[in-house]
Length: 77
Image 1: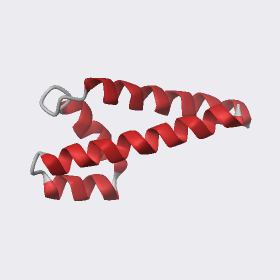
Image 2: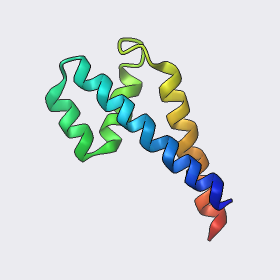
Image 3: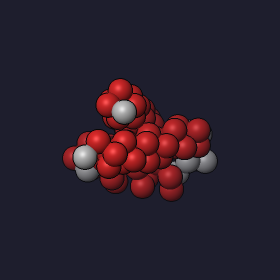
Image 4: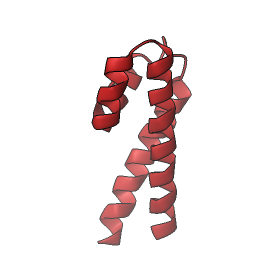
C-alpha cells in the first residue's frame, strides 16, 4: 500500500506541474503563481479550463491520483 501511496503522490505532483505549465502558456502568470502557492487553485483552474487548455485526460489522471492517495493514506493508519 505504501508503494501505491508513493506512486499516487508522484503522479499528483507531475500533474500539478503540467497544469502550472499550461497556466503559464495561456498567459495566466498571476493565476499560475497563485497555483504554485495553492495547488488546490491549480486543480480547480485545471477542471474549469480542461477544454480550453486541451488537457482533460490530465485532470482525470490527477483526480484519480488524489483519490488513490486518500484511500491508501486512510488504509495505512
